[in-house]
Structure formats: C-alpha cells, structure tokens
Image 1 (spheres, one colour):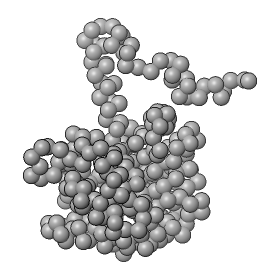
Image 2 (cartoon, rainbow, N blue to C red):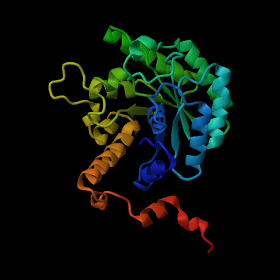
Image 3 (cartoon, helix red, strand yellow):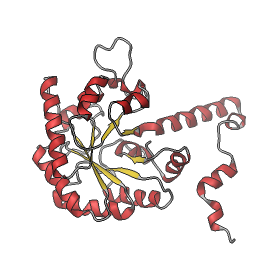
Image 4 (cartoon, rainbow, N blue to C red):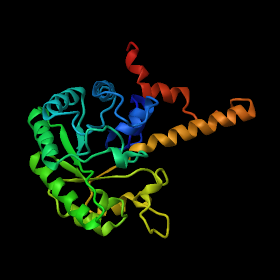
Length: 284
C-alpha cells in the first residue's frame, strides 16, 4: 500500500500489510505537487530515512529512471540503501520526469533505449551493499499490440540479466484485464512479478477499450492476481481515500456548524499517541 508520510506508513503497517510503497505520485501529492519530478531525490531520501526509522515493514521506493546517468543511479542507490529502503523500482521512461498517466504525457515522455536502462540497473546492482532489491518496469509501447507485448517482454528479460530482482507485470498483461496474459507473462520470466494497479475508478483509462462491464484489473480480487503467479501487488494511490474522507468530514462540519461529524470518523487521541509511539519518550 502506498504511503505519503511517516504516519500513513505507520497506519499501513498497523493494518498488517507486508510492504509500504513510496511512489512518486503520492509523495509529490503530499507536497501539493503533481508528479512532474519537481521534488528531488534528496527529498525522497529524507522521507525514506524518517519512514524506515519508524516502521519495521519493508519500503519500496520509486527510483524513477535512475536520476540521470549510470553514475547517478549508483550514487542514489547507495543513498537510498543507507536511508533504509528495502527495494527500489526503476523504469525506462525518458528524461522527462512525469507520471505516464498525466494529461499530455503521451507527447512528452520518451522511452529510453533498453540498453541504457540495462546499464542503469547494472550500475545499481554493483553499487548496493546491503541487498536492496532492484525492481524493473518498462513503459515501452506501440500502436501494434503484439509488437508492444514482445518489446515489453524483451526489455524486462534484458533488465533481469542486468541485475533486476523483481519485474513489474507489463501493461499489456495488466491494463487489458486479461488474467490469461498475466499468468502467461509470469511464466516467461525468472524473477518474482509485481502487479501495480490503483483503487477502482481512480483512473478512467484503467478500463480496457471495449469492456462492456466497465471493470478493470483493479476490480479483481487479490487472490485472482496471486493465482496468476504474481507475488507482489502494489496499490500506490490509496491516499485519495484519506483525503476524500477528510474533505467530506470538513464539509459536514461546516454545514452543520459543529464538530459532531468528526466524532465517529477520527482516531481517538490515545490511538494517535500509540501510532506516534509516545510511550518510548517517557521515563520507565
């Protein structure tokens, strides 16, 4: 599940999930920014350091495309590892830092040559010391679906050879909402597979073209996805649930002219203290 600050990471851990994800979209949103690469890797290292110091759950951190050259990637791999990241995911979109779901991204994002991204991953693998995992993702696309499928698999296999420990299920196997394709892909690679999708309805483009039921892979159960050979499911944009709940409660408070709407929707003071670990600051 995706965290955007330390307290959200603690809530995710308390709920029993096995990993916390720090993706570029939601942590940029936590700064009040769109995912355009405006915040720096230093900012993200600082957040990772704070988060890793407060939770025991492994943290998956968005490593963008490696933050520059293979030398940059090697340096920042070491910094994130020192900060406490358990895994870094790197993709092969070009030098423009932006989420590929943002309006206008189709004309701005370029996919890097596979050989360049393989060099980035190789540099990351050589630089790590404590076993931080490298998770690779491809943004390769084509007007011809069969060409896109072949190219995505080719690239991910190349990234595995370069040192990737986990790969993202490619979009042809997830955005089509075709479990047969997802299962087939998982059988074609030698590493664990991660499938990423957001809560149902968050992005309209998740629904495959021609779908009659208006459903996407986000409507599938976790069990269905795991049965396809996927080992990790990542859902970054869960922060949208928290902000909708906050906004709804604030509007009710303003409308009713009192604080009663918050009573049943908020954490109690003691629950907040427990999340913050207040007892550790008191003398025994």
